[in-house]
Length: 428
Image (cartoon, rainbow, N blue to C red; front, side, top):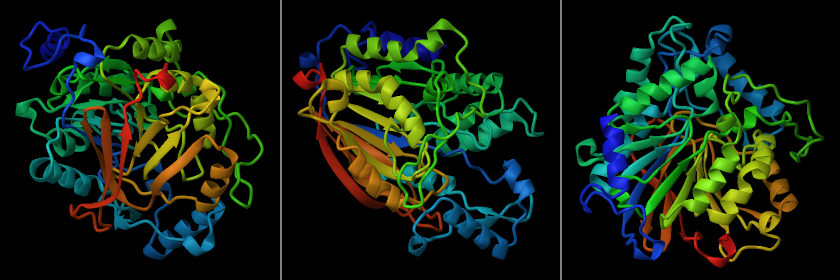
């Protein structure tokens, strides 16, 4: 509570200006120079906390490779692009499971922020705890130890916490998988844990490190989808979107119960419209565009629910969910009636612990079916994170990967610079 009070005082200008500008400042009065934002997600896969599948599918090395191939074929991916994910022997079951990249990504980000760039704050895009979030002991594991192993030890000290570095967190579908109470147990932990910040499942915050120039709008897209009709993804043999599947029943416990939870899309639009920040960044778990061919029905629903708010008021949409690194744009013609001068940028950083392949055939069809959308870059079967640097009215996002042995050697694989949208004629 003390930390939240200090941040609130900074944001409304009751602490000295070195900590933050008054929230009544106009966009034009706010200086924005070299603000560094670490973006990472889907980090919660720890080998000491197995999935039920790890008990059901006790694979030998040979059986693991066969299962990887079978999944590839079932997903209708091009056979000549087949690649098995890196694997390891589970310390719990003694059988083969996917190798986690969480430790390598953690080390790489700490090194990156200490040696390469200045990281002012971070955003964590959800699925913070696999396989099923906090369980309140239902799986035989103690949540206090789980929080320490999966959240605090690897990611609680990514930046210089003593200098005020905080990671602002959103929830993903896996974080709600056991129960609503388990989801809120994780939120309560992150509201008080050193190095992290949360204020309920959805909230807005002006990070003090950005001195009032940036506002984050944290959205719980799992909650929005749980209150919507979402179809199961089906692909034709050529990788194109298939006919509508059955209605997907959420396997997680985040159905909105209050009027405020049910009105989250309206809350987002109002919060964006009323914001005085120069840069308005919406952070969520689920993408509106992605490239692996398995999340497009969720994306379709979210485009209906939140694209009006994003296109009118947001500068970028930051997400995870897919275990890939991607940058997309949407020209907002479906919302504004004509292409915007400055398209909406989506940054997808979900390669923090698990790997997932792209689906090249799906991508080919998606690009042709949706002319408002462009995939600027997408890469799967890797671990990594993103870094966004804001300087004045432009921002540059770098996508950074580490090797398949999970060593923390960093390679920049893509860089993209884009202009601020909020306040421009096509974003109002």
